[in-house]
Length: 176
Image (cartoon, rainbow, N blue to C red; front, side, top):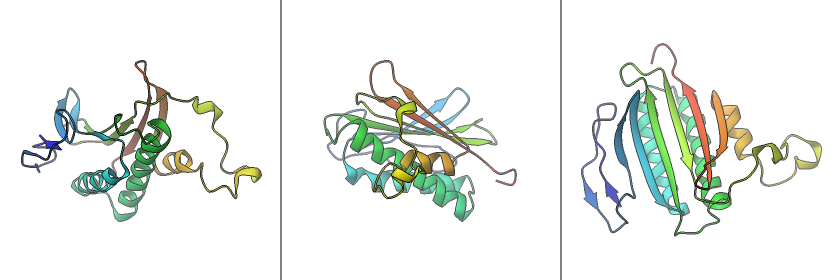
């Protein structure tokens, strides 16, 4: 994995390489209206721990309270699991990209988390309602419901070149 992050919210990671393809791994980008940390990795559940660590660090740097931090992390984790499992169908040749962007760059007001896969995509309107009586006992189908419950805004969209993007927004409290 190649790390090339620095400066996001006052912390950084040293550069190192552990045998992953160029462009894979965390990257820092200074977006036009915010700071962005980008993670790009193969579709493997083993990568969830790395995403969790980055989510936790960013949430703590933004001074999320314990509840907001926990629920943001659950939403991100659910989205990454969906990208690996349903989007990329566990195909390790396909990548998942996760971006954490604070906007604006100075005195951020919100955290935008974007998760993209390289799968076939789906129609968000066709999702079953997890609260419908016939779905209450099903063991899956609640991930997007959780994301919508825990984040301030969630948008699901097809990517023109293929795959899906989940864009989630968590507004920061005024005392953050």
